[in-house]
Length: 207
Image (cartoon, one colour):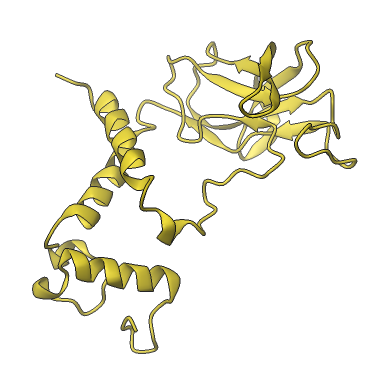
């Protein structure tokens, strides 16, 4: 029997494939958008405690640079330290890449990577004279169920976007005042597009 975590990963892949051609309504969302000069890139969903944990660091220095695993809510609390390894120049992204391997760190919780950039201000894509020599990743989680939320999100996506008729009890406040006959697939999409892009009027109805 396929494990819950493996099944969750498969649902995540399916969700990303399904969303790739129909995400215009949410293209304004920046919840998962990295800053343009983000030097430290991690798996934003998370890592399993015993899994391989690799981050990439953009740095033109071919010597290894120091990095630390720090607590997300207290970056002065260092939980693990290591040194990156020069990987190669990636011509597809036009970036010099280091690999930061912290697979040996198996504690659970929410963390960030803290990296001492040795070529601060010389990012080939986004040079900046005031770039900090210390760079942080976005927060990430290490835990046994890091993909659980993504599996639920995938199921919700397929239910709300691929079901011909949606049960009102599952709608919450997505479509106020709707009954079972008023939340067919096409109607739901029209209303969701209006909710996302235009908003509700004062009576709580979609224009």
